[in-house]
Length: 433
Ligand SMILES: [Zn+2]
Image (cartoon, rainbow, N blue to C red; front, side, top):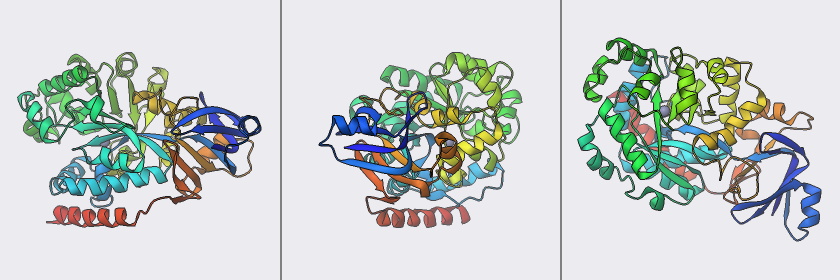
């Protein structure tokens, strides 16, 4: 099959007028102009999308799909400390079936938003299973917190972290590990998680430098997170440093994916550039939780590899990555449209360690392709960023299979949404009671 549009976005965010992709099964075989590919493959079915940009499936590099049904359950009043306590109460009331229903709804949202690859935080195998079922790819990071290193092997077994992750994750997914955050995992657990990730050859992600409360805790040991850290982060002592320098002092920053980085102290952006694999920015979640604005200019100046994430639907309006990109551009006008689109595609895939398979329209890559309606324009990148929205996504193909056509999913979402609605009610009861 040949998929074409008025424009195609090629690696490096280069635009090709009348660009097209020739798909062979689940892979991209060739990229070129529509006329050239039609002439070369006259037998191939042609699916042309007029007034559309065709581009790689988007990469939402930080999600919590299993929390999707918690959208709206805890009001976003800008008080992070109280929000996290309420969300924790809701999460503790849910079981594996609830997480599965919630994750299926989140995976559906992702596809309908043009996202075909995620970096997702999970509590068990539900999210990768849901994603695998409907064709969403990703790296799924099993989250652990509040335990001692001695409890780690049993905990990983209990939450069904695959013993041989490379073999046991479904084909479009990879498994990783996350110790949540410096205030919920003690220094020895952070080190043990990093060591385990390295030994198993899986990716490692951590939330860090997210809130003023976290910074206060690290600086002086007190503030709103002091009681939480005492209960959860066994062995924690305030390092009197920023979060990034603290993680580096523990030896866990190397090749890590670091999420948020809203509050950086001098020198920490360069430390991230030197050691971490990349940083995922979540500007709308940061704003809605009252956590502040990431120092995008300092991150750009330090040449940190940047990706973009929505964070969970519980701390955002939706899982619309275009809206996330517009929010980030509003924070830092120096961020070019091309750079933002790179963050949403190839840089996102690179930060997740999947840049050789996802995030680019190039031969051999997964056939993850979306068509976004931009009208009649000579400036496709600008139009894409300004107009990008689920209502304009005319086609979503992942792994060579159409998941949405003409703006409609190709599978029934009714049972998925109904199951998620029940989880929402259950979570709302838990928060209320
Ligand atoms: Zn998060």
